[in-house]
Structure formats: C-alpha cells, structure tokens
Length: 298
Length: 275
Image (cartoon, rainbow over all chains, first blue to last red; front, top):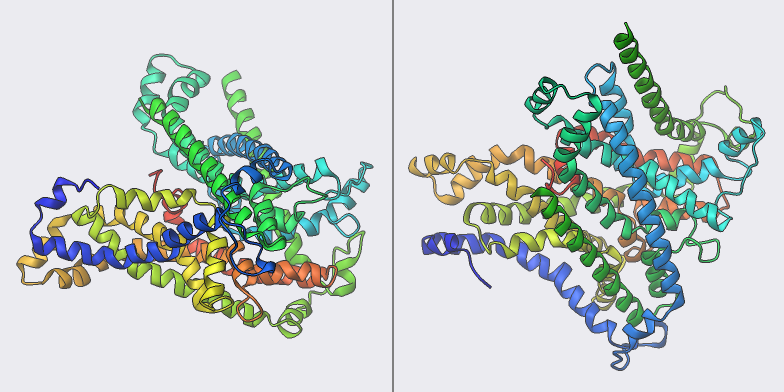
C-alpha cells in the first residue's frame, strides 16, 4: 500500500498518534464489514442449507447454478425495470420542482419546500403502510375516490403489472424529495454572473436554461443519479411491505429474492453467491457512471 | 403588456404545480393521522365519515395490547447507542485522516465504497456469525450490525468537517501549552460540535428507519418499531386504526429530528459529494 509522502514526513510521535486514533475505527470496520464479507465469500462457495445442519462441502458451482436460476433472472429484470423507472421519474419530477422552487418570485416557497421534503426521511416501512392503507381495495380512500368519478377500482397490489407500477409510484412519492433537495442546493449555488452575462448577450429564458443551467448542473444531476441508482438497485423494504414480491413473483427484486433464498429457503451458500453477484453489478454500474461523470466534468 | 402577462401566467402555473405536489405529499399523511384518531367503526367506514370526535383509543391499543412502548425503547436504545459509538470511534479516525492523512487515500476511499454494499450481502454473514456467538436477538448484536453503516458514514462526513477547521487554531493551543490530546478535546471538538451533532442525528435517523437488519437480527426480545409495525398488518388482517397510530408514533421522532438537522441535510444525504 502506497503511503502518502505527507504522512511519512510527519514526526514519529505524530505518526504514532495518527495510527492510534484510526485504530478503533479500522478494527471496527474489520469486525462489522470486512470479516463478515470474507466469511460470506467463504460460505458462497459451500453447500449449506441451514435446516440440514452445519456448513457442507466446497462447491464452486454455486455461482453458476444461481446465474442459471430463472427466478434470479426474473428478479434482475424486475430490479432493472424498477430502478430505471424510479430514477428517470424522480430525476425529471425532482428537477422540475427544483427549478420551480428556485424562482425567487414564488411566494411561500419555503412552505412548499418544507412540505415537499417531508417524505425524505420517513421510514420506508411506514411509507409502504400508508400507501397500503390508501390503496386497500375495500377500505382504501383512493378506490372510493375513483368510484365517485366513475373510474374502475383496481385491486392495486394483486395485478402483476399494476403491482409493479404501484411500487414505482410509492417509491417516487418517497424519494423525489431527495432529488429536489440536492438539485435545489445545486441550483442556488450556481454563480449569478453567468446568467447576467448570458442576459447581456441577449439569451432568452430557454437559452439560459440550455446553455448555462444544464451544463453547470450536469455534475450534480449525475451525482444524484448515481446515489439514487445505487439505492434503487438495493430496493427491499417497499417490496416487503407492499407486495412481498407478489403477486406470484411479479415484483420480486434481487434483494428481495436473495432474502427469500436466505431466510425462507435457508440456503446460505446460494444466497451468499447471489449477494456477491448483486454487489458486483452495483460496483460495475457505479464505476461506469463515475467514468461518465469525469468526462462530463471535463 | 404581453411580457407581464407571460410572467404572471408562468407564476400561476408554478403555483398550481407546487400546490398539486404539496397536496400529493400532505393528503396521504393527513389521512393516516385522521385514521389514527378515529374509533374502530369510523376507521372502517367507506364512504368515509368526515367529521367525528377524535379519540386516542388506537394509541392506547398499541401501547396496551401490543408492547409498543417496549419496541419504542428498543428502537431508541439501539439507534442511540449505535450512533454514539460510531460518533466516538468515527470522529477520532476522521480527525486523524483529516489532519495527518493517515492511510491516504485508501482508508478514506474504503469508507466511501461501503455505500455500494447491499445490506442483504452483509446481513447474511452477520446473521450466521451472531447465531454462532449467540448474539442473535440481543441489543449489542443489532448495535454492532448498525455500526457497519454508521461507522464509515461518520468517518467520511467528519473528514471534511475537520478539514474545514484551520490547523492554526490547534497550533496556537499547542503553543499555549496544550498537549495534542488537550488541544483536540478543548479546541477542536467544540468547534466541530455542529458537524458531530448533525452526523450523530443523521445516523440515529438511519438506524431508526432501518428494516432489513432489524427484521433478520431481532426476535421477541429486541424487535424495533419498523419490524413491529410491519408485523401488525399481517397478524390480525388489518386493524386500520392501530396500524395508523403505530405509523404516526414511528414517524414523529424522525420529523422532529429532521427539523434539527435540516441545514446540513444535503451534505448528510449525499455522503458529502454535493456541497
């Protein structure tokens, strides 16, 4: 490991103190992250059904078996649909609302902002519960409202397509706040001089947006996209509380399917192998997006 | 004339869109609060009864029939202890990395890279280990598990806080005769306090909301609020009033704490990558 030259130039006493101060955190990271991960890697190449006793024999084919599992493929497909939909919807809606809130002529903008930020830190489980109450086919207020205007009253979470759409809508309700907050912070930090210069050059509102706002905000939008995408790829809580992956397997995400293989089928080896595949996908996508970001910043 | 009309029109449209989205956020929450205050009969009525005398029966039910005070205390203790431990250990490491560039850049980047880790990948081995060392369904077990995301987060966020404090303050204190530890405790920490506080509160909220680890690592003894309310739905069909009351009880502390740290929310939520 290459040590920084700065660190080596420090007096020995300081270097000792510096190492002493990071030691508890490094030990902590080893105990709660690295050691469990290494252990999971070990488990992932073994046969181990928990209900049948302790860890079985070495079996490298776990990874091949799970990659051929049609249920994992189905979960991957659902995860991609979910992630792509929520990221696109949340970025577009969030960007739109951030632009509206960035207009200083809007009265009550602090009140709007406060309301729009409420969902952000609500526990996902409570968000799911609230929507289950609202969408309940017989007792929910939404179907009652639909009946008043003469629209059909679907059984939201029982239809395969509709269940996925519902999860997407609830996720957008929950997470768009985050995008609004981040993009609004980005917008307010843009320098006024550039807009003034654009105005002097005779740019209209659209041109200012297209040639000043968009290029300057692009890095922030990308960061928001990366953060949301990583989180969406791990979606678990909302699926658990809204549909349990159902109806059938229509809304099983990768995280939920791994949970099922782990906690319901009690297959430690295969669930660990899948978890590493999910980790690999996330790392890969993050690296790709970060490369894109570097290009945008140049 | 036309320009003015156009501008007014734009502002009206903006208000219209903002009101629409605000209602989309507020109405579901208000509806749950309303349902939590309705008695059993009214809660189930469709078409809904709009005016009724509010009652706290549902709140009494969840604290009386189910041990929600126990779940509340579990959540409070686990979230609180994990975030405090992370703050103590993490702030020391962050200070060291910020001031001495300890383990540069690997240590710093490894903290950030933990963000990519899916919780399910970590919870499987942690469950197996806890089962082996008999820490499953214990408070320390869940606290340790929560450190896996509290600790890297705290270190990462606080590095930039410590970097923003000028070295000169510390050097001045040392010239005045403070030892390095004294200057750390008496000079640096008071200055860094707002940062420490917001990192601690944010960790607390993360822990309070956490579901997957709690679902798998807790049993009868240590169940936290999210796990408890999730099971409330299935146990009895739906007791709409009780579910609503439990939801309100779970959300309330988070809303209050969010208000406390609202200024540093962006930094906290984006892992410091957007300033």
